[in-house]
Length: 437
Image 1 (cartoon, rainbow, N blue to C red):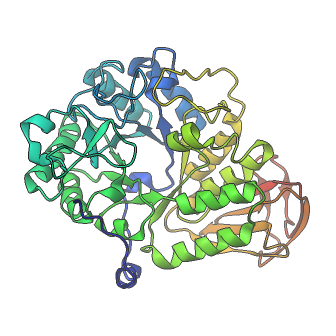
Image 2 (tube, rainbow, N blue to C red):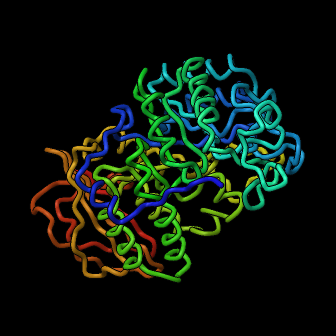
Image 3 (tube, rainbow, N blue to C red):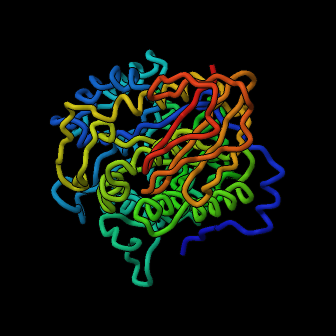
């Protein structure tokens, strides 16, 4: 069976003495997840391309495309199947378009100063992937010789990472995309399910020609040592959901954040989100887990906190307040863009203000309601941003200690100018982002 490596305490000490290095283009960056099937009525790359200028204007810096490859038919779920049941690593799903169509999108994004990453599914193939017959030893098999799958992923088959030829074939498949396109990196599905020794071999090979960005679907400090730039903040996300539901308070989130600070390699990025394709379709993320006014302060947190790499999912700017079907066509209807100004303000601030660069200094500020109110500042030279969040359903008068007196700020959303922010009135789920003039 496959060997899965998890973080060990003795490794953590080693990590803390190291510094994570990232591609420079992702400094102050952000990610927007593209669900091609549901993004337009056509569900094609060419139809999506029309939205790129709008997303650029909103402040999106990197586009992440869910898997572009053909979907297996054996064991297919629903009529269209799961993106993550890949029938061929080196082809494009004809429902979406062609490789030429995708390359046009990459060129268009690059021309606007944006970056593009693609989803990669290395833990398993689809149930009718050619390797199952051409290379039967590329897959995990039971005692009867039958290819196996994990959990309820019956439309997939597990890959055998003890086979070094399979490993090399996987790397060659990834290199196909770096050779045939100008993508800027990979988001790796179930990265935690692949032996970390493979990433130690794979990532340096892929980075040899250009400094690609790697996002791991994993919530593990150890995987950063293999070369991944960012990991998922599932632990923090689940706590945020509990706070929004009134089950926990900010002290619980602080406990998790302290653990992250002490266990992850210095400079490790964390992907923060209020929704993504899994959380939207299966767990009612955003519209139900952080309903109404409670969404905004957590979105501000995901965009501005220390070491955050913020994610926005397809349709959150509309917003789409329902689960998108995962195995069927279920097009998003874009027309109102109610949240677009909110996200745009945050994204453009992050893109333009050096207080969000890797060289910035992050500092938590002392407040008089620590179980409900979070305050922090980010400073880089003359640039400073102060964020105050009410993560509760009760209005509070907030006293903030540790601020430099006499500084002049502009509040990001109201544009109000002030030189005194030590005492604030915050409504339930209120938030303030002060930018130093």
